[in-house]
Length: 225
Image (cartoon, rainbow, N blue to C red):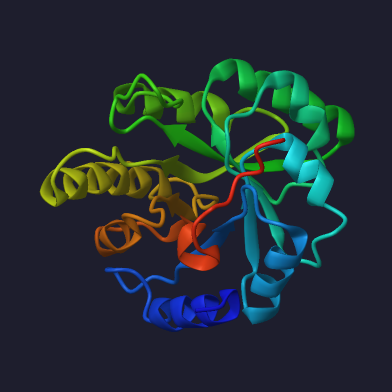
């Protein structure tokens, strides 16, 4: 199917909301995708797009026609300057050092940046994020930081494990989300779910998903990139 058909089918399926009946935000993960592909998705109904790499974010920014711009990849502190003032939501706030540097840039620019705190829910060495047991303390530190506004949490499920084990991890993230939401009116999103596991994540409480392959098809990497 075409990108447009994929988008329309996904949006139709998401119209009923997640397992709790909440609206779902679909973020198109646009790593390696061309501006033409992204624009086709936007015309078909995509409202939010997410880049993993700062260089791609910069290169495509003026070529993509609309859409809320998310940053969903690992962010180096020396590249923050390219995102400040242009990013609807930074989903990968994964360490205190990044929070501090990002806050400094935002205060200087006189803006407030919406962020999600990234949680390494599977305790995987290959992934960034706060361990779950440290996330609440990190949330309390970051939520009081001038220039930043915490809007929720982001996590990636491990590839390994049974559906039951993965569901248990989503439920832990949902409990964290609910705890924060109960005392903080800014909390809005639990971002979990990619092309291989989004249905499971939605069933158990995610309300934002990040899909690439399900929208655009398999990636074709440029060997010269």
